[in-house]
Amino acid sequence: MFISEKQVRKTILAQIDALEKQRCDTCSAQSAGINCKCKAAVEIRKLGKKFEAISKVKRKARIKELLSTLTYESINLETYDALKCLEITDREITQRSKINPFELHHWRFLNGMTKNPPRTAAVKKKPETEYEKWRSVAKANGISTGTFSRRVRNEQISLEEAATRPLVRGRVAAK
Image 1 (tube, rainbow, N blue to C red):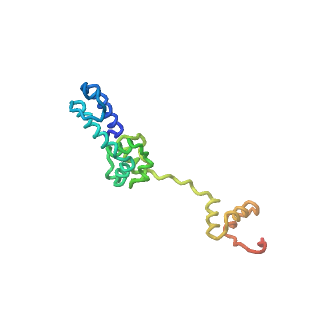
Image 2: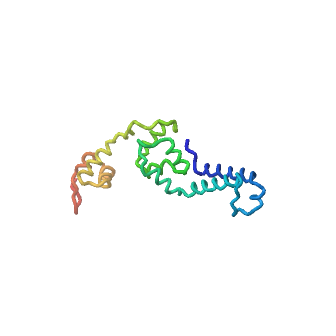
Image 3: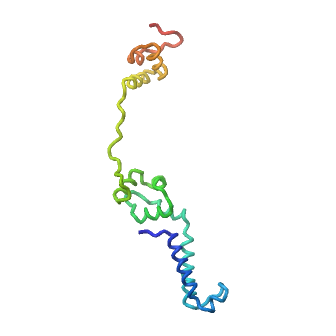
């Protein structure tokens, strides 16, 4: 499992704190700028360099590096854990990589990270009503939705007639 950089830095700092207690009398009494040759001081300097190297890796650069080549075929637990340790949401992963949300959810399901299986069935459309059917015919005939509705409501004519009766412009239509 991937250990976050923050956790590594905390571990290094804890090791440095523990080594501080083991310093010799000479280096603990002197200022920090002097390079003592005792075992604890040498180890503290090594850990300091390691800490510095880890801290120099920029978060944005690390995120960009991880997401630049990420695809459904290349994603693995280590990469996903690294992104999560960098506090990247699933939405950001899908927006900034070549993985669509369905694929990411499917991958998470296969790896036991979610209990909900991905939706495989298409969303069923609500059946079109008679009114909606004739309204679309009216639109195809160049009759606006407002005119179609007014004809049905005010003139109380059939849906078919409201959708097919031609528009008469500039004068009142004869009944």
